[in-house]
Length: 210
Image (tube, rainbow, N blue to C red; front, side, top):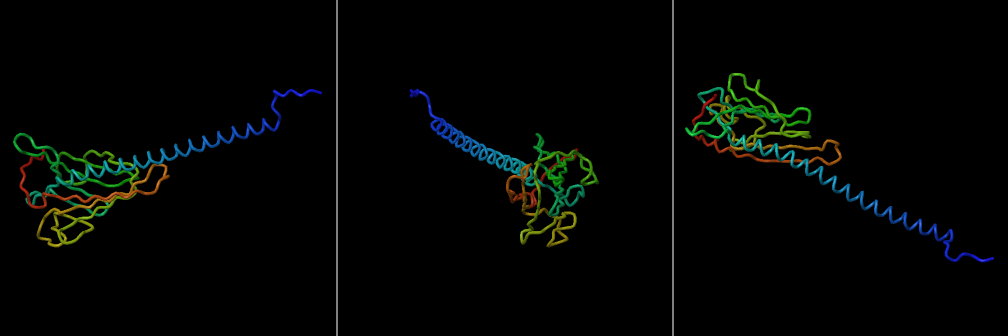
């Protein structure tokens, strides 16, 4: 009886199948590991960009905060969870005048929200238009520096925490955010920024409230 030497034996076929399957498993493992790392990095990058955008906007507008002892509509009020103030962040016109607006930052349903009201009135915190600055924000904290220590709240209409006869802006405001991705797959990221307010040094400015 003559055997066909060109054919593969069952053992050879099984060995070849095992080798090919092993190689495919290794390639698949490397692919999914690479994809997982890329996906993780993409989520963390999105979290960073999202939170940083919100902080950058707040930094810019808080630096332009403005109050006036002679006008009760111009104020700076805040606690640990929300901040409501008047900002001269709009660019000056040719006459050197600024358009002031009321701003409010607060957290609702994991959304960092920004309320802006261009027409100042005696109803702070009401009206205006609201937009989302950042998503996936689990916690928002503010604190206020008087020049001597940090405080949990500030109300320029009631004087400073250290001197009730002195209506003033805080020298600095600290912002802290805790960010989480939508699917809660990543660890919490904590962002912090300290905003120096140059107008706390009693700068003079002309403005229009229209």
